[in-house]
Length: 253
Length: 313
Image (cartoon, rainbow over all chains, first blue to last red; front, side, top):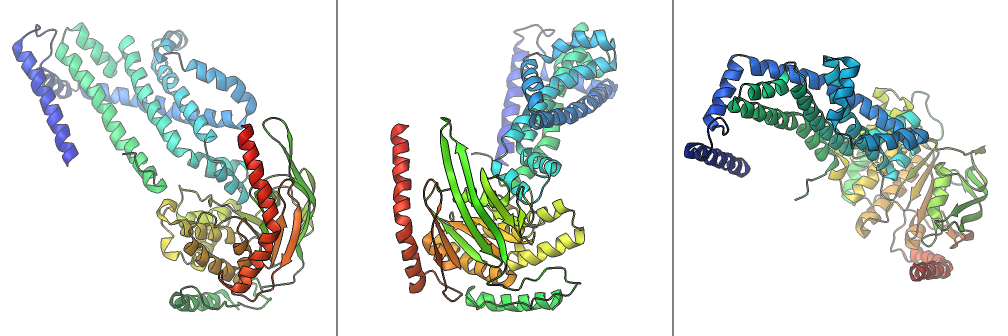
């Protein structure tokens, strides 16, 4: 309750200062958006369905791209732990490739897939796959030895050990990777959508710029942040809480 | 005698038990025969049974970080009889845990052979279950799911899983905690879950690696009573490793003393005191004293080695 109150006070203050600056007219209105203008943009955007469509298109791409990279990333991470050769070859490559900003994959993707849906998906997958792979791998490697000994001791075979002991044991770590992967995927998607034009929130953002509509630009930015926040609260935080409850991991301080 | 009778007997027994603060006389269950319909094997307590485990000239060497050769265990030959409660004591670093890991099949000997029921041991198997000092329970599973784990790996039917988990949780008196998670339990309760998880596998041999070392004295005393009771009821063969001579004298039919580096069998004690025993019993204290006399020199060596290690580090 106290937390909600201080958060409310903070945002109310922020908007007040913002509105104050807008009234002071230090900058011309086409450079400096107003809270009311942004609100108006949001309302029109939703009313004429452009925002709904943008959200739906972007979320659909996220759903497909992120699912692919979550599944592939976990499998790849497992393989790196299982196989020494893969670890020394592909494992090193994965770490070095992670230094590549995901947008760098876009030219390649366009040459391969053309200006298509698949090119965007490719960028989303490449943006999040590697971080999920790496966190799966480190999660598995950091499982305390006693769990694998206990598992073998109780008769778990090689496969059973991975699926019933090592993967669940690395879940807290894995979840951090999945969360980070989601954020990376979301960023890659919006960036990709900004560069080549097909519906989606990234395109709405660029459209705002093309029309010199600063209010729409900020409105879409607010939307992007809000969606990131909501998925985190609705999805990841619920899983995180359940893990903390089971494992007795209390958040520090 | 069938299972229903057995449970009823048990509940009645637990009723009494509460009033006694665990110190009730042991009950012996059943004869040696069993009905084919019994869901659980009933072990008759066997004292001088056939040889269950035989170690023949077992050794284990390691190379340490500097590449130096380290002999953890040397030429260990030992027979453990069915139903025997064997305690192994030794100073820290004498290879006690290594010995259990070898028997469990989690580690391989550098030389010699380990036979279980006359067959050579080469990998972990459900016939030998190890209980770790820090329990090794899975935090992502409930107490009941932990107890069911080994059986699930074997592909036991769901109904039997439930039945057996219920039975063994009752045996360690944790029925009302079956849906709790591990972190919600006290240290003593965790070890009891680990015991139930191991017993549920109905192993031939129970290997215990200083299971009570991290517990406070009162909890440990209670768990001694409980372990002794469970052992008498199941007739399990137990190999119990500890550095605590009093614990060994309290629990063991026989005590084996290991020497410090290389770990060799230094001496053996037969403990023929009546059960149930108590930690404070002067006869237990006396046996512990004798074992301690054997052990003292080894402990000295162990401590000196640690000092040397620190100086050189």
